[in-house]
Length: 483
Image (tube, rainbow, N blue to C red; front, side):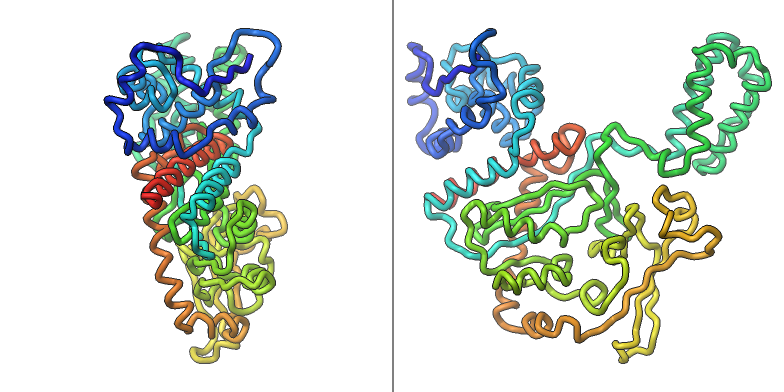
């Protein structure tokens, strides 16, 4: 059953809160600032109302998760601290002597009660609503950027996957006949994929040639798994305990495995919208969604400030249509000239290279044509042809037998003349100076609220983590602005 218990339990010790927790304490001010009754409304359908034991107050459970994000604690450490920290108990509306929950209830609450909620948009909307009501948002500009979060579980290399599966097969054989050690091939001394594949093939051949173990389920299962792994291509060999995480690129030399959070923030440093995607998604494609979400929560948007990733053609056309100034510098490799297959190749502004629809980054770029004759110049991007041969989506992209795979972009400086003129104006240069603020906000999310690494696997878990972290930083910012 669903309880509603916003007030404190009767206790002779509640007066301790007035004595020990100052009026300006962050948690006291936060509790006074936010009407958490919206949690009841949003979770109403996720509880049974006519039978069963009374559940723990959902507002209290929600506040537990908020404390977890504010102080970057594990579930166990959060509950342990709640036993003795009176500021925590005050925020949770508990009597000082009241017992805390079992940490396992937090997992259940996340998986069962918050399931199906659009928590990210809901919580951002609540904080922006409060900020507008308190008069702390006055600007009509948003700053946009994306920050990456590493997956909780790292991606295994193909070599590691093969080693793990060949080891499992060997162990199954040793339990039946340890003398087989002398018949098996020597393990590779290097970390070269081809050597690991060759070793796995030799291991399989020895076992099948012996013939004594191939009919036993204990052996056939790891044997068939290893054979299948060897015949699969490299794309299949790359595995992770996080099925949703994808490889993204921050530069030519730095890649990450995980997710991206695309953020829109007011000049007062209050996040007004966010979308969470897998790591390979392009920043610029999220701009229109961020603007629409910001408007939906009450933000007036007249100016958008971002880096070159947001200055692609579609965004320029959309901004002009919506009468929005887009303060994002043109990048000649993205925005100038016509290019084919725009939906199949995305430009990664951090790496300075194009990425194909399979997520593979170009290895080098060459400019063709005479310098100074921009109309005739072309940038050609070269992809690793060996990777293309093994690619799962090579059909229609890579032609069998081809010795190279390239993608070309013509350079035409007159395509975005209006934006080129605008970016030389004083208005553009003044507004562009505000972009640093969102870098600081990204740093705050990562270093103070544990947003550098995902706390669970899957895109849904990442969205939940993002919702609580952004809710926390927005409330803290509102309190600071009110002071």
